[in-house]
Amino acid sequence: MKSAGTTAYQYEIRVQKERQDSGDLFGKWWESENLDLQNSDVERITPQTAASIILEYEWLGTMPPFIVECFGLYFPSKSLGRVLGGAIVFSQRMEQNLIDAGTLKSIIPDDALYLSRGACAYWTPKNSASNMISRAAKQMGDCTILAYSDPSAGEVGSIYQALNWHYLGQTEDHSDPSGFQIDGKFHSTRSLRMYSQKRVEEAFPKSVVVPSERKHRYVGVYGKPAFRRQMNNYLSQHSKPYVNR
Image (cartoon, rainbow, N blue to C red; front, side, top):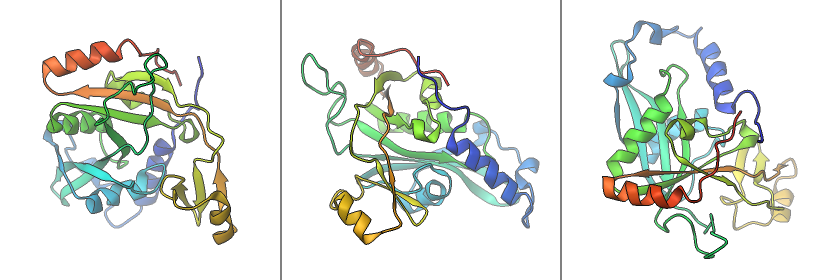
């Protein structure tokens, strides 16, 4: 079984942010707060609010196109009021994938949501990410959610495994790059879909091509018991053993 690296990028950025902020005006303010997930709220937020977390902590460092829903994880704070500790973004899938070789049809429903971005601040308690995803998904009724974990970011999908999502293997090999690093920011080929690789390289001579890697695919099911039972029974036929770090 393939193993990934020892740490994920988002863990490293959390450690880095904590070191930076420990010497600011407020110091380690979170240490005097009761930051308990039982006291937190998960609610719909605007893409602009979600961006305040995503752009700072998320591996890709960008907001996705075709956003459907955004949710935020809020904690009460005696010193700072109400504080946003995490955000997740759901968007539409722009391509048909997860094709069943036998039927040549998609394994997941066409209306499945894509969990395209998600991150938590360094001061949030353990399990904040999985807690936020679960609580947000339960607010959307019957739904199937697709998410990817990127080995190039040191990810194996630990959060989705903790949520007991179905692991459906890795994406297919692609010769096209996954995106470009331009002025320190990653831009995916999907966000630049109107431009060829040659045109991007001509416009940004210092851009760095980011090669495509096979990502891990996970699917979660939420909603009424009958819907969950039907979808989970179906997806279990395609599920594979989880990947270890």
